[in-house]
Length: 263
Ligand SMILES: NC(=O)c1ccc[n+]([C@@H]2O[C@H](COP(=O)([O-])OP(=O)(O)OC[C@H]3O[C@@H](n4cnc5c(N)ncnc54)[C@H](OP(=O)(O)O)[C@@H]3O)[C@@H](O)[C@H]2O)c1
Image 1 (tube, helix red, strand yellow):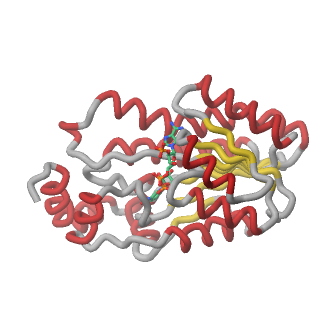
Image 2: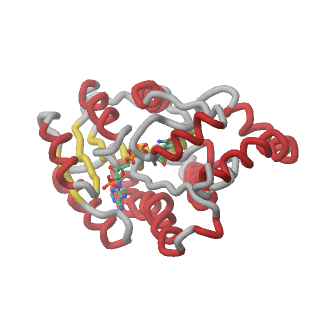
C-alpha cells in the first residue's frame, strides 16, 4: 500500500514504537489520527507532527473503541489504514498474575483491535479499499513462559488476523499481521531488560522495527515475523513443538528467578 495521502488511524501512538511510527508515517505523507490513553504524551507527539489529530481515549472497552473510531472517522473523513499498535504486557509467574490484569490485557491487546476493526470495516467495505494492520508478537506464535497472559492475547490476535484476512479475501480490504521480537521500549521494565540480558534475548531498536513495519505495509505483506532465529523458531514450533520446549527450558529456569523476584 502506498502511504502517501492515506488516512491512517494509529493506536498506541504515544508509546515507544508508536511515536516513531507516527513520525515515519507523517514523513511518508499520511494524514494521521493518533490514538492513545496517555493524553499528555499524545498531545506532545501530535504537537510535533503538523496536521495530525490527537484522539485521546481508553481502548479497553467496546464503548471506548467505538468512540475512538467515531472520532477518527470524523477528523479524517474516512479511514484507509488502521494500525492496531496499542498494547500492554505482563512478566510474572502465572500463579502470581493479577486476574484483573488478565482481563485488561485481553481487552487492550485482543478485544480492542477486534472492536476497532468491527467499527471501521463497514466504511472500508463501502469505499472498497483499506488495510487493517495488527501488531502482534513472536510470543503470539511461541507461547513464552512468564509472558503467559501476553502470549495468549497475541495468539488470539494472530488467529483473528488470519481469519479476517481469509474472510475478506474476495474484497479490496487487506489484513496484515506483524510479529516483532523483543524491542527496546518502555513496555519492557528494568526487570525484563535484566532477564533479557541474562537469557541472551535478542532485542531490536524501535527505529528498525518501525522501518520493517512500514516496509510490510508498502509491500502488502499478509504476515511477517521479525528476526533470526525467532522467525525460524515460529515455523519449528508448528512442526516440532517438543524441540522448542527443550530449546527454551534452560532459559525459562533463568527467567523464573526474575519473574519471581529472586534473581
Ligand atoms: N516492546 C516489545 O518488546 C514488543 C515486542 C513485540 C511486540 N510488541 C507490541 O508492539 C506494540 C507497541 O509496543 P511498545 O513497545 O511501543 O509499547 P509501549 O511503549 O508501552 O506503548 C504502548 C502504548 O499503548 C498505550 N495504551 C496502553 N493501554 C491503552 C489503552 N487501554 N487504550 C489506549 N492506549 C493504550 C500506552 O499508553 P500508556 O503509556 O498510557 O499505558 C502506550 O502509549 C504492542 O502491541 C506490543 O505488544 C512490543
